Image 1 (tube, helix red, strand yellow):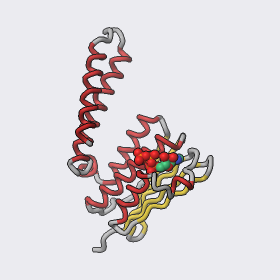
Image 2 (image 1 turned 180 degrees about the vertical axis):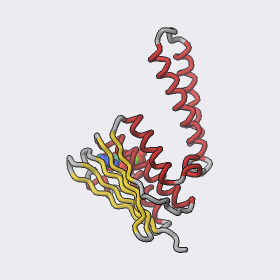
Image 3 (image 1 turned 135 degrees about the vertical axis):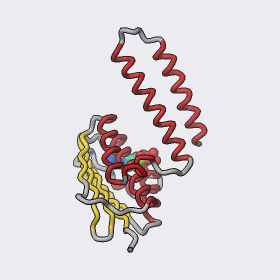
Image 4 (image 1 turned 120 degrees about the horizontal axis):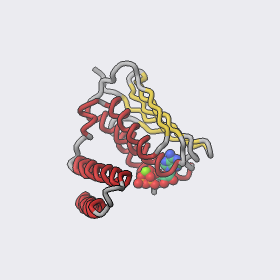
Length: 193
Ligand SMILES: Nc1ncnc2c1ncn2[C@@H]1O[C@H](COP(=O)(O)OP(=O)(O)OP(=O)(O)O)[C@@H](O)[C@H]1O
Ligand SMILES: [Mg+2]
């Protein structure tokens, strides 16, 4: 599967290079665009490699969960134009790599869903520790997820997120309010020490 993805990305990159080489020198905005597209393709190739190797996203290792979420939100704002406010806990969250990865991947999937389905103009993200539980919340002001989608076996993205937290004894609660938005709360119990 990632072979096919890699192949497709390589094809895209070649086409883009072809296109860029044919742009007139005077078309600065166009070349700026093809440059950023090219960079995006490179980054995507990197993440495909990471995902297929089962590796954690690099930012997580480098920055920790809170900063990685901030970084992802910024990227989301840039690509969608949707306002995205992040509220982080004052201190740092002590987190093992497995839980950090799960929380981050779920967060990415939730944002992807907002971008693809919500028709939202703003998203509020909250990360906090409540007692011995890590909580990540994502609230959008879009059309609101339909309850039929919530328990549909076809909602593979939602199922995947639930599976990810299950191994930690965690849960995901999602609720849609018609025309007002969708609220998702991810709870992951932290290990005792
Ligand atoms: N934030 C949201 N606002 C409105 N509808 C949503 C939202 N998130 C999900 N949905 C609805 O729930 C459905 C199921 O979501 P799910 O993530 O499982 O699947 P998907 O995003 O369609 O496909 P994928 O398997 O690629 O994730 C979506 O198709 C969409 O109709
Ligand atoms: Mg999805």
